Image (cartoon, rainbow, N blue to C red; front, top):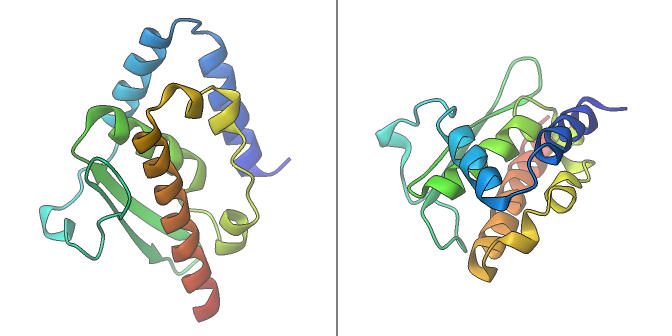
Length: 141
């Protein structure tokens, strides 16, 4: 099992303990509060994700060890929590790990079916941007 799969399985287990979606939303919001501070200077149009109802910023850099380190933020609490989940799974992974990942945890925890269509589209846009970074950094290696 890859580290990405292990992390996804941990998330699935955490959500299995909560049957009420209000509890799940509260947990997701709490996760958003765990994101490191995103510098105001990086809240630029270049880092803004197109297609999100809320404002979401994702910045990335390729580390010396060949992994991609992401920083992210959102101005909406629930979206910030969703970003935190994505960061937990995909942050500090290699471009290949990101590109080869199957993000099954999103469906397994029922997240997509409990988001509005615009938020669901935003989630897809975030994942696409993270994969775009991975493709770009892979091409540079």
